[in-house]
Image 1: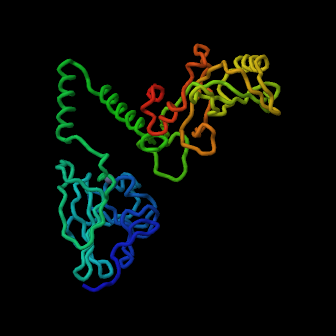
Image 2: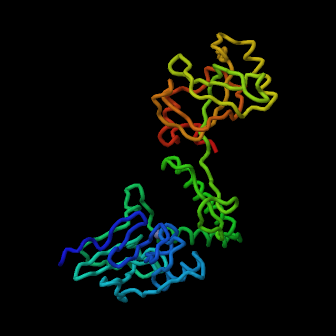
Image 3: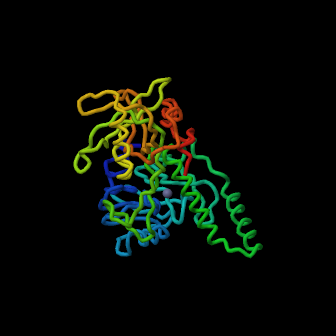
Length: 357
Ligand SMILES: [Zn+2]
């Protein structure tokens, strides 16, 4: 075997075969793209030409538009590209998925794309290939991904559907509920994965650049929230410049209240005026424009995310804090504690509050 450099190289546009001038599942528009399968993270628009199995080609046309140029290559059929023999082989993933096998002077490389070894009635079973170098998809090889036996899941859904039918019920509305619940769970897990939420798209919405209103919808995780005590206030700007509207909220650290977040928005005009009156009547100290206030009022503060921070006295920093309501029903003894809040940093599900909604 001659040493002629790698048949497959990672590049800024994805996996490339420099010798034969094509890319496999490129993430940028390129001249020639070999597509392993038609899922959105593998088949992207804008390439001059595509090469895929006939089944995958149909899906590509449905997804990327009927006018794309696709060369079809059936499983096992060979194609010579600049001295590299390319063939596609079943990957058992979805309709028409392919492992890409490349051979040059007896040296074999295989790129699996997504693959599955479970039986799947929608596609041919995964074909193990002998090779010198294997480039494998490994996303779902992480131990956190464990799935129930698909046949069991199918049997469960079928028996549930039959039960509905026997009771004279249609499964359609319930299926929608099932899907919604699965999505809702996925949204809840988003925080654990450290992402903002889920993206939902209309079937007809294109995979484009930027975001047009109505095409895609960002379904964010529920905000986190804590109950905190108003401890400092400062006068606002603009139309509220005569009122104390910029607040600092604190939570308990032992028997001390430590500042935790600043928030400006969220109260009604009437509430703002009432809080302003309270601040003027209960000022403890003045530091320039800032007043410290007798700790008495409790507010629920919502925020998007929380992280450790050495720059903040509380040791945590929150994103987009805002007042979600005035807890007139709570005393300051019932405000949250710093250790509860620190518990929100990982996942948030340990907290009573983060589970609400
Ligand atoms: Zn896939």
